[in-house]
Length: 454
Image 1 (cartoon, helix red, strand yellow):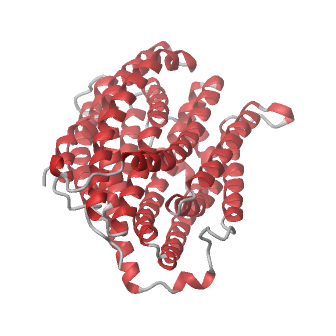
Image 2 (spheres, rainbow, N blue to C red):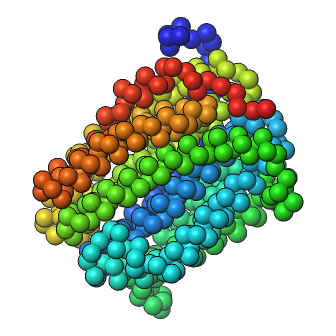
Image 3 (cartoon, rainbow, N blue to C red):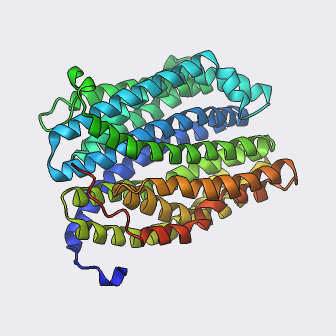
């Protein structure tokens, strides 16, 4: 069925009201989380380029961890949104307990890796002895925060899908503000605190994560909120576990493809010299900040489409998906303009060598084009398609566009053909823009228009 012949007209006022109600707090939460990385980069950039670069490389470990956590919480969000739309609170609670168990296992494994093999982990991203020393000391402290992150993300996900997005955003934002303030205290040694530089950033992150989890637990005791009950960890039905696995495994495959791919990009740029690595570190922070808007709309899209489909309103859910897909293009072009507008300011804000500053300017221009694809794909794939349970496509598209095209080109350019860093960086941005036609073809098949509840 062609989009212009959709059978139902949606209430535009209700649509945009719901979108703003969900997207604004989620975007704020995403912005605040990205602000931590921005704060680390800016503050450590005022100390020394090596400190900033080492922490940027070390935090790739958490980035990979977030891929596992993201797959679990995304599966929980897909099923949770549909069961919440259906009004089935009991099953929603079961989904929450499955999320907690899986995320707890992931968090413990990454904590142990950071504590026992931090130097080995840093060797993945750089051979520079100074960067390895700084980064490994950071990981040994920050590893404690990785132990807590998975649990708090489960609470925050349930708040989003159960109509408590605003409290979740406030908790996350408050923890981020505390993190940034503590960054300044421990990095620079303010108010009599020790001047810990990179270690101070790690300590600030750990303390703020502790506070965030405590607030999540406190809020969960509201009558309308979801909270854990020990007996429920072992009482889920086999059918629900199978449904959860059916959504989680493709999501995990897709997120690992994407996350390890992005980590590979960072590793490739990290081996092209400290100037290229430093410029890429700053560009990555800007990218994450600008992407907050599309991340919020993408998450809101999944919840809105999932609520309608789970309630049995398939045609209305389809109409929601079409409107959200169209909106993603406007968000993409707006993000492009924003990147270009802030480029002169960003280049002057951090302490970089002249060569690194030149690289950064070029990377920002390349990134501005990349943002169109990133926004369209985030809203359409991670929002609309995933909201209807069409989770396999993301993994297929990443295998082809990222792992069969972008990564081999970037690797060959860096280590075989010896291209300049900006050409290699451009290769790392090919996948998002190149797969837009494929994404639109998949979208128009409407396999995502399905009710996943039982």
